[in-house]
Figure 1 (cartoon, rainbow, N blue to C red):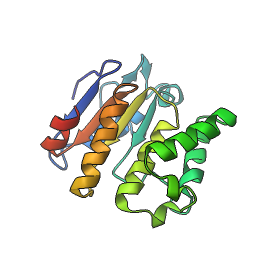
Figure 2 (cartoon, rainbow, N blue to C red; figure 1 turned 90 degrees about the vertical axis):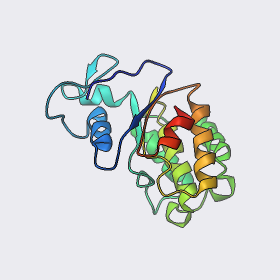
Figure 3 (cartoon, rainbow, N blue to C red; figure 1 turned 120 degrees about the vertical axis):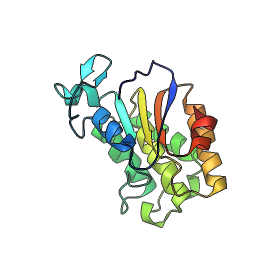
Figure 4 (tube, helix red, strand yellow; figure 1 turned 60 degrees about the vertical axis):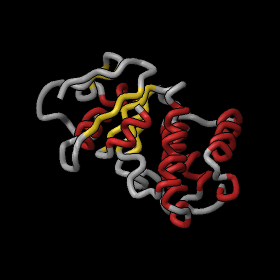
Length: 180
């Protein structure tokens, strides 16, 4: 596979189940090494300098498995921000804004395991955003959602495209056509 994504773009990676979309995203994240070739993010090689390259990306991998089930909505957001060394008063305001923006206001103190699938997906996306990276890698972000929740999440992703560079993988042509 060979492609590039320019800053500010939202690009779809479309293919059937088992085609290697998730594997490609994991290579971009530096979670697995590619069999050959190179992955570069802002010039940083993800194999040679994985920590520097990782500072540029936040990934939503394989649906709602990106959050800690026993942590509350707020605790998840603080945790993922902390992984990037973020903290302080400004972050507290940002977290509260993300909770409201994603419609999780009444659920801020609720453990992730007690949220609906759609709310878990919103939380996973908010956890990507709170990291403060310029690039979002979204692997099948609407997987398992009902029609209404899928359309709502698609709208949120389109809004994010104004601020972030996004690579979105899906086997669903409708999602890619709508968002990318």
